[in-house]
Each structure stands twice: as C-alpha cells, then as structure tokens.
Length: 327
Image (cartoon, rainbow, N blue to C red; front, side):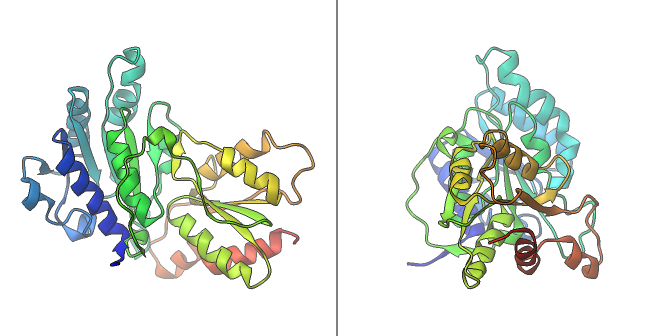
C-alpha cells in the first residue's frame, strides 16, 4: 500500500468534500501556490473550477467576512489563511460574528464556516510569521478548534470540521507535512464524537500533545523506552470543546502528567489540560507534580541560533523528564 503524507491527506479531505458536497467551496490567498499551502490544494482549481476554488486578493478581513456570510446563507465555505498570524485581521468576523451567531439566534441559525489556519515556524521567519495562536481561539465560546497531528486526522478532522454545523478553526502545522502513513477508507465522524486519542500505551507517565507537539511526544516516548520509562501518549485533536476524560483516566493510572504545547506558557493550552486534571484528581494521587513544556513567553526569534534555543526538541524534553520526575 502506498503511504500518504500529511499534506496529501489534507488534499484528500478537500477532494472528498468538494466531490460529495456541492455547497462546499474554498476561498483564500495563494490556494494553488506551494509557497502558501504546500501541495495541500494541488490542482483543485483545475478539477473543480475557479468558481469553487477562489483565489482572493490580500484582505483577510474581507475574505473571512464573505465566508462567514456565505455560511449563514446555507453554504459550507472553507476560508484558508496560509499564515495564522494574519488571521488577526479577521477577528471581528470570527469572534464577534461567527462565534456568536447561533447563540444570538437561539440556535435557529448557524454559521458553519471552516477556517483553515496554517502554522509556519522556523527557517528564520521571525516574530510576525511564526505564531501558534490555538490557545487564543480555544478560549472563545462558540468556536470549535481542531489541531490534527496524524496523517489520518489531517484528512478526517478536516471533513468533520466542514460537516459540523458550528464554526470550526482547523489548524495544521507545516512541520508535519512530510509525515507518512497508510490511510484507511473515509468514515464521516461527527466532531462531537472525537475525543483525545491514545497513540501509545504506557503506565509510568502520561504525555499529552497537540499538533506538532504530539509528534515530539511520540518520538520522546519511544526513546524513553530504552531508559526503562514507559510513557502513555495522548493527542488532544479537539481543543475546544476539550474532553479530559481519557486523559484523566490515564493520569489516574500513571500518576504523572506532562503536557507539551507549541504555544506560549502563560494562559496556554497546557495550563488548561493540567487544570482539568488537577481539579478533579484525588489528593495524594500524583507521585510528581504535573509539568508543562511550552514556548518561552517571548516572540519567535529570526536568528537560526536563537531558534534552536526557542523551540522544544526531543533532547530537551528527555532531559526535562529525567530532571523533573522520579521513576
């Protein structure tokens, strides 16, 4: 069986949606440019026409507003922001309109827009082009936030997001694009049914990640095995609404928790995961205090030398675990 890359899986998700749902269309900047979206939308404009794959001028606010309006009128638009940083131009449409629409109309009207946002990091891209803002958006009621880390989820969470009646922010990370795996046949799954997934069983420590940090967690767990440390790894998948039950059950078993997050430390997703466990776990259950590994609370540097210090990697995480936990 030919393996599929993460980026090809996203393309497969787009193809499935456009082929099966005529109300789906895509708009955004650079939709057929590898510089903007890699090969995740390759030839979609040729297959489905430029009436459904709409390459737009550079105006994040206007494009997102158009997508939100179309969703209110019964379409299922996917607005693509090739850099998450510049979604900020569209905050009114996302936060004040799409997120509030169903609530303000008593659930009688919805805004089922999917906002695809891409995280770009490293490569000296610097402070304004390297931000992971998933925790921002996960804080907002009315918006669902998904963050696939595996090849299969790159496709399937996109499909679930677009078919969801609520606005969804779908976040993919270019550092994951070259991952490969065998894809199973597509099975449509409601977003409500998707919970954190255990990717590796273990009984000594629970490690939780999302997006690229899940890949780090898996690689670290495999290296820890050689040191006699058996880690259980969870992928959050859906950040809002966050379902902590599977992770809670795991921590009750392992009695240790580490959360690795690709965002900043203060008020980040790692804090939310830890709090959701500590609030309910019986006193004296944990052997060691729960820990988190995040980005430092400062913007991303442009210097390649400083980038090596800024981003967590496997070696740093393993050292942190050995220094912070007693096994």
